Length: 300
Image (cartoon, rainbow, N blue to C red):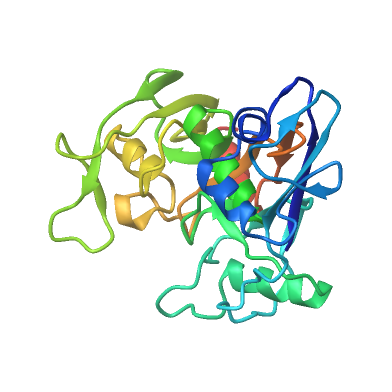
């Protein structure tokens, strides 16, 4: 998918300065654009980065070529639940049980394969790049960038905290504190292939939680992450003594849930080029809703 971004200069300056500071392009992006046909233009004319701009000049930059499709992906049939789409990004509600990227045993049935099929059917070439990911059994919103420039800008938003993903989880037991911050470091569990654990030798991990609803032996909890470690929410809640319901790997009760009861229900981000705030929400999944209702009925 070709990406051409334009912006009008509001001051007199060099084109190089405008590209790096006003358009916030990286030096690598400027270098790549220089070697594309009509990669950098001022008032519709090809220009060198040494060009001196005047206020009111229109600058156009070709950030990505039109032929950069996801040709390495096998298109996989399926209808993705698209919550939001524009020329730079796509937000999809991923069901539990679906992997985000092709992996061992899932070479053609991942969410990325489905999106490759989706764009092929639309006659659009787009290389989808996920901004963050969700575990196979976690449901909820996954954000994909549709061009390299958008991917870089969204990644920067994550680092700066402007990109926020919020989760809802059903946990075993009721936390003593209604809200708090967990800062225990996370590492791979020794001798385990999949399991992670809290460890002083691990990587920094920060999880904010707030109890939304209390039941007899479980709670609905709202969570936000300041870091993105593997299984972070599952590990931190298990460490607190409140594993996610259905989470066999970390000791959760499986009576009402057959997978870890975790759902990425809301994402807030800034559109990479228009700078508009976008907030997307995904409906609570049926299996977690049924579990919640069953737990509510136990206290009546």
